[in-house]
Image 1 (cartoon, rainbow, N blue to C red):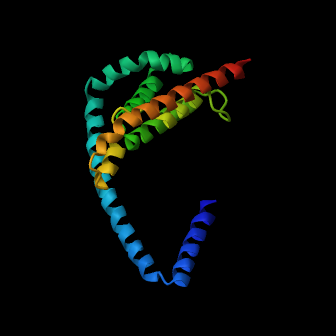
Image 2 (image 1 turned 45 degrees about the horizontal axis):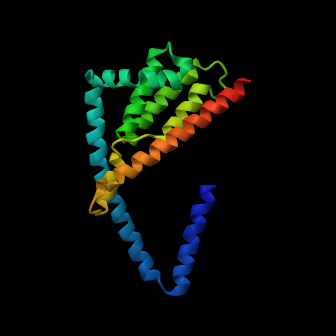
Length: 193
């Protein structure tokens, strides 16, 4: 679908620029946008490297183990099917910790690893297990205490107060997680009847 939508948008933009006599502005905006994209990528790369490094250091210390222990009751409630599998619990914990710290780029490979392990344990390979569905909802809501990526983007775009987004992010992600978890638990109970 996007293979159709984007070319159509590009053709419409070029056609409008030609017929309205704004071809020079279009050319300028193309080059300015590419410069902005490269600058944003470089700024984000530094933030991503910093936090991925911190996660790697934390993974080699007892910090992740302690945080995983704090998350154990939550994981036990959200994922009752995988209580006995400590490997999957650890992978889910790592993913949740990365999301809580706002490290979406670090959370993605951890989430894929956890999902692969859950699929390996899944008896029906054609359908998502309840734990897999809950994990997807939890990742989509992505509770964040420190939204590092958003702060980095706001900072790179010249925001006067890039951390002003923190409190609204807390409210939004907690509400999204609560609503998603509640709905998923209800659907899981209904599917068992």
